[in-house]
Amino acid sequence: MAALSIVVAVLCGLTALLGLYYALRELAADLVLLGACALLTVGWVVLGLALGLRDLGGGTPEDPITLYGYLITAVVLVVGGGWLGLFERSRWGSLVAGLGALVSAVLLMRLHQIWPGGFA
Image 1 (cartoon, rainbow, N blue to C red):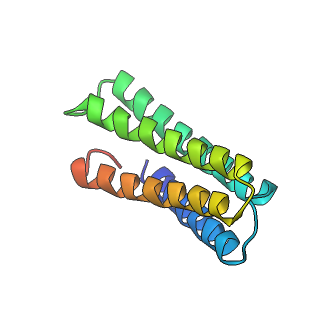
Image 2: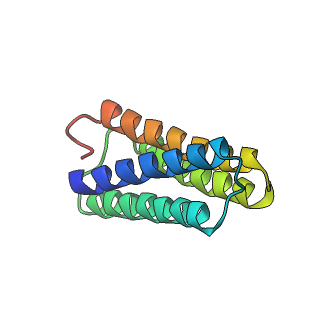
Image 3: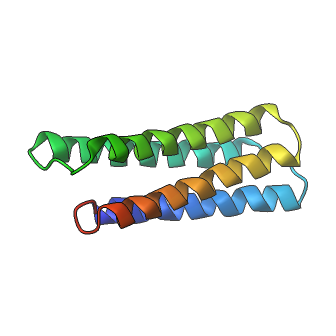
């Protein structure tokens, strides 16, 4: 699970940097940035499924509502940022897509702070 968290963290960072690069170059979101958002979403979904399977196996977290709330929020942020990047055809759409990935990375960091040792 730690390797999966690292993969999601790297995807968050790369997507955030890509969104910032697009915003600084005044580029609208294209298939590369939207594909990075989609890949990050898939990473979050896989991480959520892995945690769900772990919980079905008997390893229940102390507060599952907060855990799965963070996971759902991260997915919604990335999908919403990509959606806005698709429809806002200016640099600001790219910036929002990158910021969604950045906030998603913060959520991943908070997950590790709330459940030290038990999450990863």
